[in-house]
Amino acid sequence: MRVTPKRLTGAKRLVLVGLLLVASASFRPAHAQCDRDVFSSDTYYGVLDIVFPRPSRHERNIAYTIVLRYLPSFTAESQIVINATQEGRFQVARHTPQGDGPNINNQIHEFREKPETCTNNPAELAKVVQVQVQEVQVAPAVIQDLLKRFSRLELSPFLATSIVPHGADAVCVDGTRYELWFYTNYNEAHYELSCSTVEDEPPDHPLVRWMQEVNRVVESALKQSRQGTTEKHR
Image 1 (cartoon, rainbow, N blue to C red):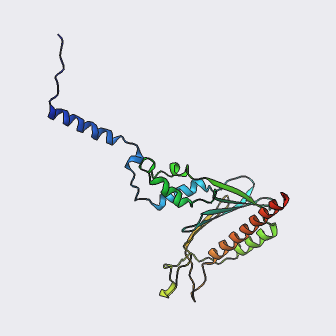
Image 2: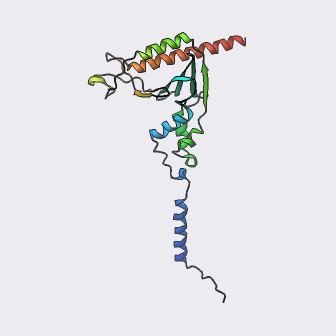
Image 3: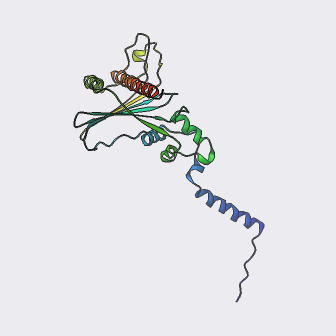
């Protein structure tokens, strides 16, 4: 016997279309559910960990590693990696966003502004960030001096609970966030610090001052390298 399918009435047709729309919404890709106004710091740091990778703790021939990460509020982020080999040599590299465009934070926000590319997946967001890695030639004596000063820093595990110590009238003039990792094959330490003050308040955290000095040394070495390259091509 042949069965002829029944036609749906208008009301039933509307119900069926509604069910199909609900079902299709449930299987939309993740970026369609993305809220462009909600962006967590965990996502930002997840992107940084991808584009600014840290060496493995168990790399052969490396006695210890120091990773210094600088995260300004508006200018470009950067990372400096210092590897000390078992033979006593030093390898220094700096990671920065490529070109003179916006910093990584702004690149991510610009990418997420479009509904079709809005995502909170760090791996997807990292694909839009181009990073350059520069090998830095620093005199061994200079590195040894910096490391000697680092080893003598007195770092209390108790950190400030306010950006304005003792409730004084101080101004936060540096919105940079500073991160440092120091690790060997067996141990690891991680510091994360923010802000600096002016006027008559105590100076920056000693670790921040040391990181600022390392950055100045690396910047100077890169500047000298660029000048040397320019003179060779004259």
